[in-house]
Image (cartoon, rainbow, N blue to C red; front, side, top):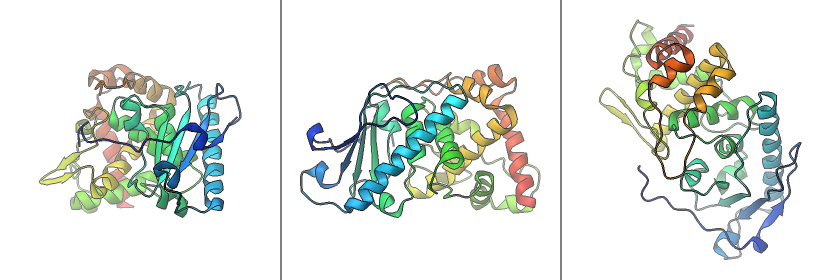
Length: 291
């Protein structure tokens, strides 16, 4: 899906919201964190969440915000300042969103499906990563968000729901490329990470594997997101966070502009092309699949 057709439910006036001032271990520049639930969005006076579930979610959210800020401080990675955060929970939402709204110049706007909140498997850390570390390269943006949800998230969430990222990546890659089970050289040649790196926010991650197409639907994203998270973990584990941060900052998110970044930036930062790094990552995945 391109940039057309995106829309969000407009939040009500601030006075109608449940508001919270969140210290999260340090000041948030006096920004407000405001929660809106179902009926408040529609002014319909109903909600699928009980008061206890609302309180549970706000507590979980503040905990995840504190964890993310501590993670960033420990790595000297200064997060973006999105201003006030508006968190909207509704049965109308099918997926969580915060990166695409930021691209549309709505930084701080977050959406969560009510069902995920009730099940307590909402990807809160993932969406907060998009808020504080947005990126013009969709592959890197989702890779870091998936990695952080797995690394510091307080609850299991999409796409791995608590499973190790490399393990899940191997599983989904085998579903896309059955030859992976044989562990033969070149069995993952059909997978092109270089193609994912060309996708600029807000376009969804899409991948062609032979005659199969994996797009923005649940089937496609359930396979592509583990690949993005696993590749990010590989980069951080083998080359360190400093280099990954340097690469990440080469493609800042600028509202209404497309900026996936030139391929040469990989060589500049890592001293190796993306294709070479991809080959090394594939060797790791193939080796894990053999065990």
